[in-house]
Image (cartoon, rainbow, N blue to C red; front, top):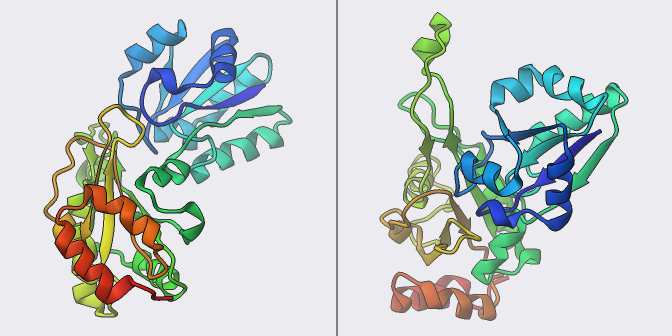
Amino acid sequence: MLHLVGLGLADEADVTVKGLEIIRKAERVYLEAYTSILLVDTAKLEAYYGRPVIVADREMVESSSDEILGTAEKSNVVFLVVGDPFGATTHTDLVLRAHELQIPVHTVHNASIMSAIGATGLQLYNFGQAVSMVFFTDTWKPSSYYDRIKENQQIGLHTLVLLDIKVKEQSLENLARGRKVYEPPRFMTVAQCASQMLETEEERGENVCRRKCLAVGVARIGGNDQKMVAGTLEQLSKADLGPPLHSLVLLGRRTHYLERDFIRHFAVDRAILDAVWKEDYEEKK
């Protein structure tokens, strides 16, 4: 059987009791290590679980899944996922392949950024579709996310922006030459995300990501040192929230006054937040 076990958001102790019992009885334990990361290293996981953990990078999961599923045909195999197992489409694909091979699949859910973002005080039912922000390059600056945010804004909903991470990625040159040389890991910050949103706004000019738009940046959500900051996109483009992982929420017009009261507690500048709220958000539908 293939067991998909969610690990939660922060450290080794975030695993559920049910998940831990399954891990300790499994024949093999894999850790998906490219759609997200925990705030602790693999050695801590192995010490806590009492089991060796095989790190599964993108290449293994997407191109060599037979190695994982082959073992699951005859024994219990665990596939660990940071957050919730179905927080990324890659894991859905793994389940579909298991079904094709008639391998039973069992899932143990856990907290993910999709639910934990409620820690900001923003009400989950006021969120629209989530979007991803990738690292821009000199020649590639995709703006499809901008259209999704625009759709959310048209009905007044918040947008959760998931920020890019680069783990075990190859440069274009090394990829072209077939060299297994990998770039250092990179994790997008709230400041980088806000800056790219403003850059897209300058290009598109549809008032979707204006400098005065209110947003909330979060870092290491669920950890003991989690950090949140609220302000305009311009303010967040200069904010330093420390180490990864970061996420950002762009507020919708339907923001409730209780949501405003909550985010005021971690505002960059309460006077500016109050002024922008009164002008652009108060009693807006």
